[in-house]
Image 1 (cartoon, rainbow, N blue to C red):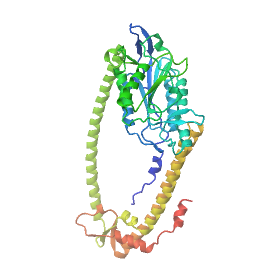
Image 2: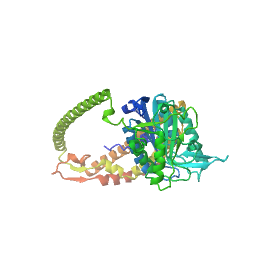
Image 3: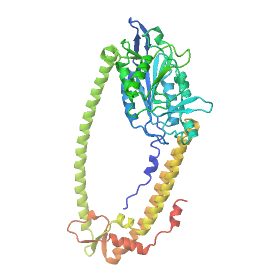
Image 4: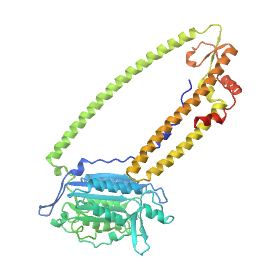
Length: 498
């Protein structure tokens, strides 16, 4: 029997990359972080710590790629987790994905009053002089065009610093720090500099702080100096007064000096607090204590012990399961050997039952049919129709991806998935109908050859034993088919898709 060809599975795969959004809250993000002054008095407490790390390395609309950003994302995530943060990562977002990612992160984590929120962006930044004379800084998502070629397209896709300020005010947590490993200008950074102060009661007041890797018209290297110095700072090098904490002001001072130094003056980081009297009184704090074992509570250590015991039990269960699976595989192999022995005995019996007066011939039906002119023509027509439908589905998917989350998006997504499913079924049925019609013709050809040549034709070569004398009629079956049946007219194929 001719094997059923499969072309349809590619259609379903078009859905694989769409409509998937996932995130999880890590246990480390809810570990309390006490903040104490030089006298040991507790002046503040972070009940939760959450960070959003955004990296754009693969640009698709005219900007150069930044392969080093992938490494930046990994290393920043690791450093922040070591400092007690739950870290959410977004890589290569489009404008819509960037906006939705920020909205979702702030909605989920930015409402706890005693939380600290950190947002880190690595990717291209750009500055434009607006029509009314001011400069505006932008962060560039993966699908934003180069403004030198498409300014309107850039403005519709890039995220401006005014919107970043809106996000900063939307956060309800008392402390938020935004870091941009990019260079651009913007009034949000045109702020007065605070002199680093010791931890005191004012530290716990609300604050929104911003640090950027450089100013307008400067270039950030793909191998990031800013990222390297940021990690060094929060690991301790940024603790200017050696009190066991790195504040946002200390971090800004450290990065400004270190990045200017190591970039040989080609980068000048900017830092400061938002110009809002209700959001510029406190200071973001990184603790240098919470990564040490001694800083963990007894409850945390007990929980860690319980988790390790559970992990050991899971590994033991996995080992036992693997042993059972191996034993099962051995039994299956033994059964396959027995099945083959029985199959050989059945074949020998079938050969023995053939009339002795006839010769034996063999035809590979699949090979014979696929070599006919008619089948080749039908196959090419079917493939062309399939490619046309696949292109149509791809366009539908792109249109849906441009929609924002909402009722219309969910309905169109549902209709689209049903459409793809229906097309899968339709192409499968049409292919089966086409195959069966051609196969019926080939069986008639084989019956005719058997009668004309006085041979018994075997469809499976494995039914023949090594001592049997036989002829291979596969090529003859193809030639006979071509001589009897002309190339199928397209009217039959068109009727399949009416």
